[in-house]
Length: 160
Length: 423
Image (cartoon, rainbow over all chains, first blue to last red; front, side):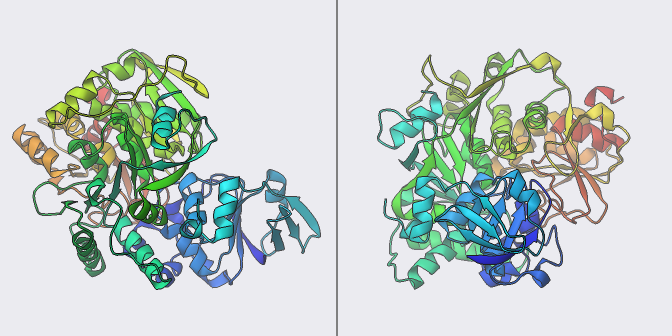
């Protein structure tokens, strides 16, 4: 999976900025996408391209249980969020709904990756290749069940 | 095993579980509201488009529904969502639907205890992050997204990783000017907004035994703000009395074993706690109220599942009795039953005599959706649970999270005020 990076040098990016409260009444996924990241970056919808990745710090997606958050990012074109850690509900919403890949990266990769870098994520080898910078970062493998749900294409396609 | 592990072991049909185990658990109760309900309906539609036949759900008796976020209908879209939700409950035979304007209704997490919807020992999931609240009744209670709730509605089960438990032991009785809100803000300030990520926060000790059920609910409510999967308190006589007052006496209490394991134990001396406020823009950004006495305010908000229970309103009334508010102040009881009790006790008269506007139960302004959102640069003291940028309105508005006592004292002075300093 190849894509370029939109980077937010920030911890605790919460669901209130990923998809602000007033839009919770919306359940049209393409409509939600228009408001993705509106509370943090008004230009997000202008710069995002299909296949892009978001890179951020600790506790990405903290706050509410709104599935609108991964939906809005996914329907904006975001294929993966690379963060040092994730808030639990955002993480399971992303995986169970098969909206995007939540990938845990280490501090070193976080500080090394820049806005616009072209990355290739390989979840089989558990590594990210930074094509722009010609570097490899190791990523933590998914826990067993998470890996199986991702492979199945979401919780509803997974057979326990 | 501790209480959480024992509940999850029982619900997954295992004799024992340990933190880190991934288990599919049978769910006892599930809640959806006017935001997560339409979200779940959208998932159902997606599944049907993909060829799945959905003509019934797992158990309509175990599902309950609230209208709270966008009621009274904020606009045409919100009104339509309530219609969608109503059609859904009719189609699938869900009878426990608390409808706005038809007797009891209110904020989902408030109804969960006020109506005894969730009982000790149960596994309860809800389509809302503050589902954790109800763990104060001795249940495992956790929030989920739409896909997961849809999965529960169709299968009656969901996966959980058995969490590690952080144990917060509170010694002694809280001073009269200190509320559970001050304690939980202090804890979040100490451990941070990801301090309990993926974990359970359990509260115990003499401070909890002494604490009322409603105050306990404030603690578990805001475990969400520390990133916790759930918050929990072992049931005791106060829990039993609370449920008995609501006509419920039969349930299977679960208690931790004497050798229960906790990842870490934190101790707090109740007598050392002070009125505490979380400054913008994070619940972990705390300060004692007295250090913020120069912060000028535009509004005081007393509402939400966190801060508009009956005892919260009583605390506000204690301050406002015979006084006038200096800034615009709103009190929105968290459920109609609480609204009525507040009326019967004369609290609403105290509020209105003080110049406060009293409104219907809604999540509206707490999540910045409607019913009194903040303008650019406006500053609010609020009994709610979050103060992220834009949470209660404009992205450049500011919210200070505080106890009902602090919020009321601040309403009187127009600045953040420790209730002890009110003349």
